[in-house]
Length: 289
Image 1: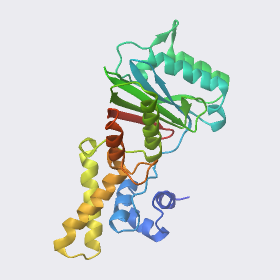
Image 2: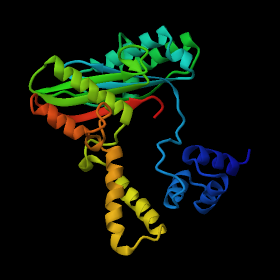
Image 3: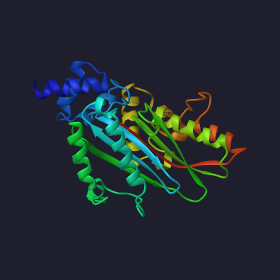
Image 4: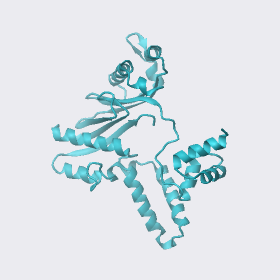
């Protein structure tokens, strides 16, 4: 298969556009996939696809929490079969709990972790051992650490779980609360479920990448102009398009998955009228992303 045909196939899978449109997009954008997707979107031939060009790996993601911090980890395997194996899952728990119990770390690189010692052996040696046992390559892909503060609480959720805290999607939500009632725990977990389902890019507009906003504006403006709309209403149409974009990618602007009549922001405001609840931040890992 030629490189062009291979790229056309990939672009069609990502965009859903036709063969000839994909071929034209690639030729006009030096075979760059990202630029070709933008080209197709500007022509109105594809909506903002959520598919990724990155290969989806097998394995699992996990969440580990104590009173001081929360840790998200992704470890990749070659097959889904190994990801469900008890030997692999026990190993995953061991690595996750090791990171959780590291003192004075708000972040740590993979290389730094691999060179740390545990019971007189390097962490990298534990990976070598599990590879030997299972017969597949096992790779630590990424780590995220969130530190706890006073008057804040962690809430978590694991989707497609192999264990309570290990699965294909894991979410950590950090919120400021003034009590520890069961109702708060349930509400926090429901918000984590929403995040797992909707995968927001930022908590609010202020936290959204400015480059991403400008890029979306550029794309939407090109599409609006291609429709031949009068100049005097272009700004109004653009505002509407951007508000729709924010409602898809901003957590507080999204429609709440458990109550599609309200946004996440309005649901939190209603809940906070009786029990104080303020989101500080959130993180999530999706296997392969």
